[in-house]
Length: 88
Ligand SMILES: [Zn+2]
Image 1 (cartoon, rainbow, N blue to C red):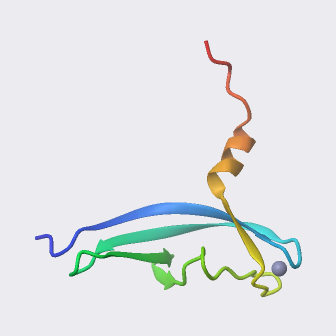
Image 2: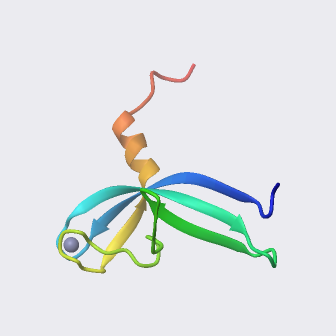
């Protein structure tokens, strides 16, 4: 029985603190639901616990500052992997 459509995806983000220079990566479970009015509800979870959206309220675990830059984690991965074996 589907009361409302629901989907959970995983997203990783990289963060860089502009105050102390600390950088880290965090993985989130993103729960997407459709509300009763057809609106889209998004919830972020870490280890099954709801957390505030990392995109609107990031804070640095090192210094507690809020001047944090959010970067897409995928780009870090691509850089780490380096160039492929070459396209034909
Ligand atoms: Zn910091």
